Image 1 (cartoon, rainbow, N blue to C red):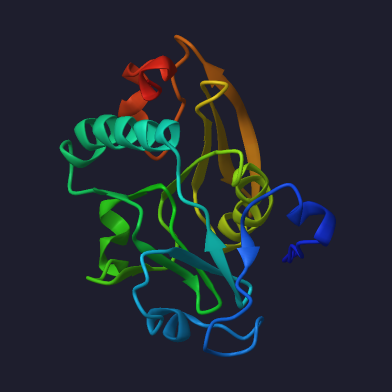
Image 2: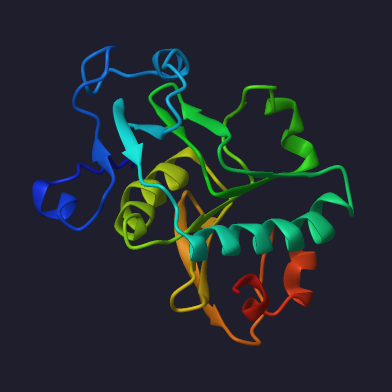
Length: 206
């Protein structure tokens, strides 16, 4: 059964990801990929969640350090070992016409490479990784979690640079199941990228 996450005002106080108030375009709730693609390039990052245009906060240094390290290791153990693709934000993923996201890191396996265009990925990646920050942690764990689950993203990793850990979710019968939170010398038991198991979690964080 599909689920829709509505962001209540009490939750918005805890995050810095907010609906955009004054941007030319359709009413909130009616945004599609085509509307989003026509936004002027103002240097900001946006996503569309259930037709609502959202403004993303600027990532901090710890976030960017973690992104670089995830891409480095995934590139070595996933992209270079087969005809797979590792990509990094900002790159659009059109989960549905009214859900357009920019995962911090994503992996597309050979079987789904036909969904990759020059402008975006149409459909779910095989693996989506979000690097939590104080302004995005709730959004990543609620709205993004449900969006990825509903779209059929096989694996979702939530990385926390402050706690230096990674939680791994895998899709089982249409719903995410947590394989656990991995820290220190633990390795990630990925089904999408099994070769990454040689990399201790500590190496993903500066």
